[in-house]
Amino acid sequence: MEKPHCYWCHRYHDIMIEKQLLKVTRWGIKTVMETELFCSEGCFINALPYLHRYAKYSLGSIIAMVLIIFGIVRSFSISRSLHLDNDLFLALIIFPLGFLLQVIPFTTPEAVQYVGLKKGILMTRTIGIIIVFLGIVLLKLSRI
Ligand SMILES: [Zn+2]
Image (cartoon, rainbow, N blue to C red; front, side):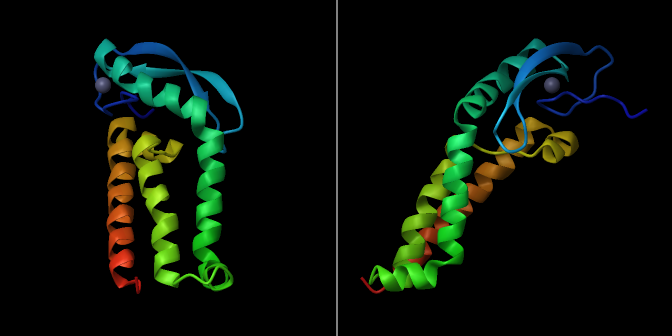
């Protein structure tokens, strides 16, 4: 059997602490109590703020994300019907996406399994920063 890793830092220790966590299922619909392993009390405390925020806002932020992605996919027709420059429209909808990923840095169960929650959050935040940067570039490109 694979050695268990710490849910937060992904390190392996001989003695692990079992903790009950309130977790949200993949699509943010339902919260469930699950047992996860931590290498220390400190790692457990580090994971709590993210898990609490995620349990509270996951459904709302997933809906927001779906709307933004729909907006990106349909940007040409939406921006035309709003008489907006397409680059400006894209910049306006991807800024909130970038900020959303800072506040609620989504991780997938797979990411947590392979790198741990700490690195998963860092990866999502990095993507969020790239998206905000892209928004700035689009704003520069738009004719305003
Ligand atoms: Zn740990």
